[in-house]
Image (cartoon, rainbow, N blue to C red; front, side, top):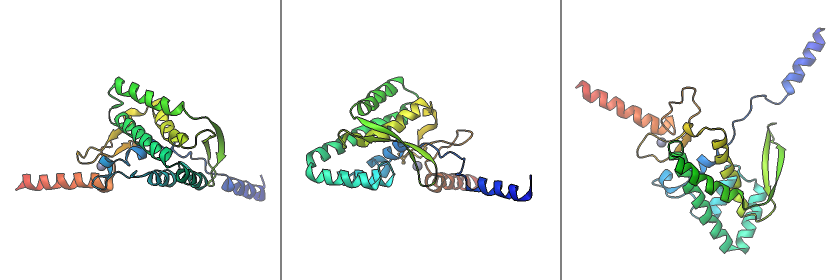
Length: 217
Ligand SMILES: [Zn+2]
């Protein structure tokens, strides 16, 4: 191979999209963490329908264009928007139980599956394959029926994915009893205990340190 063709190959490889697959979004856990228990003392992040739409947009569950359409519809149909918010909170409560106790209780899993299928079964739509700006492929669901009803689909789909991938044993609540955040443990050994090392993990470390100092006295 001549030097120039090696260079050409290098350039070609360089321009290829990164091969590291992005982890599947676990929207459902982030969604659970919007509730009042997880947000304490701030209160429920989903205080009104607009907060729900903003959250879905910020989490990239829906894009700006769709969020705009949803907002315009909410102005025209405030009662439907309010009902959608109530439903979103109901889904969230079911997903919290699944995240906290799904691994240990078959009944909890069964109840969650009923809830997941309730949401999955009520909206018609189109599945699409789309190329994200950074070059990775993503499957999306575009509801064609009731736009409000479809809002929860990506959330419950990510919970369904957790069951399909059999990863509930990696989903748990933070070990800090004051913290109600749930998380996915992606560590190799599966021993992660805190939602975040920077906050709850550090607090636990400091408490252990204080206990040690007192013991040494
Ligand atoms: Zn925590």
